[in-house]
Image (cartoon, rainbow, N blue to C red; front, side):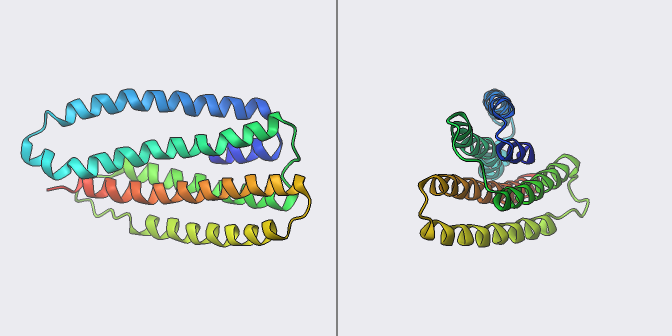
Length: 194
């Protein structure tokens, strides 16, 4: 989904941005309903298991919801930017954002596959995925630093606006990666509560 967002933002596609934003808002609503059911089911477990798993259950749940809110924090200012017909994203930044979006989508898929196929005691370990996410976060950090250098030297207000928006998107991308890392780690600990 993230690469769809970056593509729509790059192409200034208002319709796709609105559909993606509505989709995220609907997913947030569905997630709230599911969480209520999960909490009720969680309370039916034995007190020993509940006490041990409580923290990891809530951390896992919070990070999965935070992924959705992070997408919304990225979508909203970009949609406003497109609706107000501001300058499009420069080509070099658009290519960079595409690359970051594709990598983040790949990480989403890896985390999702790990979570959906995980079996207790099957030897699966999220360490490789966590290392890959950490490497991606360091790439984003470098991109943020480079963009900040451009922000401080920018004299044209129109370019300054798009660069500030781009900086916001980069920071939210970093946050998405960070939430994925914490999500997979908390899930692993939740499932392996003995």
